[in-house]
Image: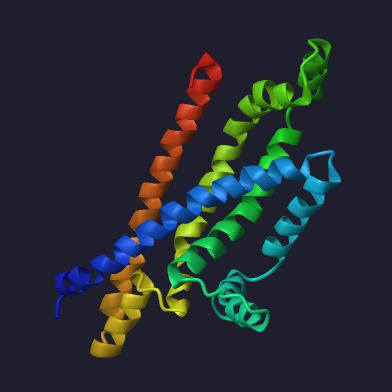
Amino acid sequence: MDWLNYLELLLPGIWVTVQLTIYSTILGAIFSFAFGLGKLSNNWLIKLPSATFVEIFRGTSLLVQMFWLFYALPIIGHAIGIDARIPPIIAGILALSANIGAYGAEVVRGAVLAVSKDQYEAALAMNFTPRQTLWRIALPQALPEMMPPFGNLAIQNLKDTSLVSLITIADMAFLAQRLRNLTADSITIYTIVLFLYFFMSLFLAYLMGLLAKRIGTWRSTGRS
């Protein structure tokens, strides 16, 4: 069996990996802003849960988080009379999203805090509310600073999708392992997968670069 045959057999797994990356990156970005801005809140009812989320998901293994959602949560649910079973694809997306969201939250928080104090003082002098200051002053200046680390997180998230194979999701890594078991052709199969992840990472980096450029243009022109 040559490499073209292997590639054809891996195509369904490639599509699953792409879907996982897209959904978890988008949801992770939402988590990043929700919990990053939550940690900046003066309201402890918002700040404490946000800080707890970030510390838990930054301080524990992504693989263990995935196992907990897929294997442990249903057992806990059964013990209290609730059906808490989660489809593997949902467990994978949630774990990936929460993980990237926890790291992204610190990127958001750091970028907002890095905005010059003069900007906040000017907003205060113009009688801006805290919400107006955030949306009109802080975020437009902080967003371009977030993009390089967000790009790195997105690429890391793509590579982390390979872990979902351990909860029975037939992604690229799962199908590669199955092919390897059937053919024992480890060199060819894993070389193909290696290059697939590499080129997918390059493409994702290109897309993130385009987004960063778009955000930079929006900031300079004041148009969305």
